[in-house]
Length: 429
Image 1: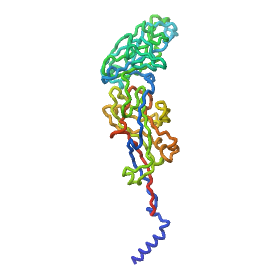
Image 2: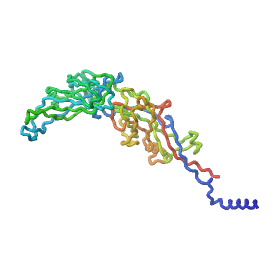
Image 3: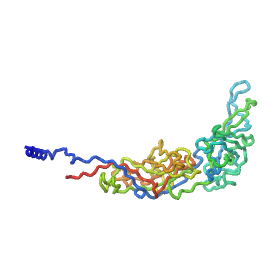
Image 4: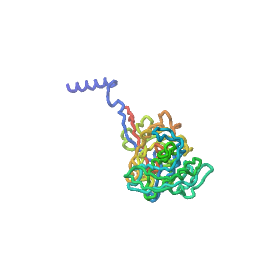
């Protein structure tokens, strides 16, 4: 009886086989795996370019005196035409517009970023009036003017000489600003907007620090004709605010540099393998060789390992990284760039300590769309998709400080991380 039942069962199974739901005949479930490609497997031709933007574009200044035994920086400021009228209360108490102003003095007020400045105790600052013509966009530590066909050095490197105006102490615990008194003679000289030598230089006298100047204001003291017994403050519009510094950092002999002013960009070519033959975990899961296709890539990201930036240029605030396709590698450093792959609102945010005492942090920069376009099956095939990437800061320029990462070679080299979803091949019985 048992034998009969077994035979029946076998026969019944044979009759159902052509239309059965035998799991061995169903396509295997897709498998998601992580793959990490070393530098030599996905990238080449790393190159660092500098010169993007100028200190004047920041709208802020920097002061330094032998900071980290290296950096010196001075801030230059020039103001526009003085106000020609102001509202005053006359001797009868009526508020009227006075267009006949006599400037009897003024104050230069400098404001600082207490977080970005390195000093925690009082430091001494000096203010002087510039004596030579200078061009705000091109001025450097050694050149007062550096335009096309016109290169004029400073008589003294570091935007000198200057006519001393005064010194003051700034204590960050007491506030974020200091004020310099300016006499009427200097105020009258600064009123001549045709004089390209006019302006002021702000210095840090105390050595060993780096200060961030957020802005500088000129408060003019005027004696209005409608009420000569009253002194009124008016503010002159700021025309130029820039800084000069020394030494200017050299391009790194190896590694990746991003940011600074003028800003640095790092460029690399990306070439993905046509197929993967490892790692063993991948081969065990889906079989090797695996032909890479665009639709398999769920996520792709550059993994960068931070390295310590030289102390004089270490960031003091969060660094925001950007990555963009380069349309023409041959046109670098002037090639136009594509849209951001990380988004301007977020960017790759990296804490400043990652480039100082906390160096060695792994930073992930997403490049999923870029990688997909380089693989077969993408809307843009490998023949028409840019294969060069530029690593840069979200805003250029943003700060005198810059970010540093390890380059090719060694255990901390850049890595391409891929999250792939692959359907294992189906073998017919």
